[in-house]
Image 1 (tube, helix red, strand yellow):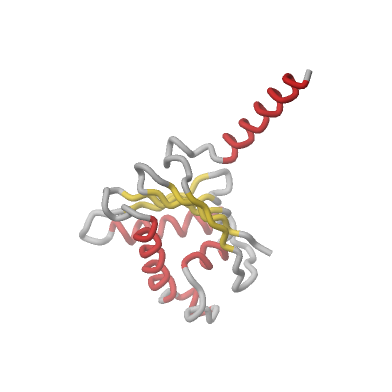
Image 2: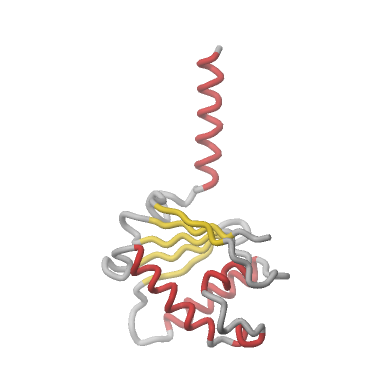
Length: 157
C-alpha cells in the first residue's frame, strides 16, 4: 500500500511539473538556473494579454526594421501570454548567462527612453525587468537555444 501511494504521488508530482513547464524540450532546454525578481517600483493596473502581445510585436518589429538579421527573438506563450521567452539565434550572442544579462541591460537603456517610463517618471530607476513586471509577465526564460535556460520569476505584491 505504501508503494502504491508513493507511485501515485510521483505520478501526480511529475504531471504537475510537466504542466508547469510544458515548453521545456520544445522552445528551450531544461532550465539550468533560476532567480526571482521581487522588486516592485509601482503597482500595475490593467496590463493584460493584449499589452504583453503588443509589447512582443513592437520588439519584433523593431528588430526586423534594422538592416541586420536578429541575433535573438522574443515571443510570449501561455493562455494569457504571461511567459516571455528570449532565445538566441546564434551560438555567440548568449554563449553565457552573463552575455544574456548584458542584453537585458541594453534593453533597459532602450525602454528607459520610451514614453511610458518618462510619463511615469521611472526613466532613472526602472529596469527592463521592472517593465516586464509592470506588464504582469509571470516569467522570463532566457536561453542560448542549445544547452541552457535561465528562468526569472516575477513576484507581485
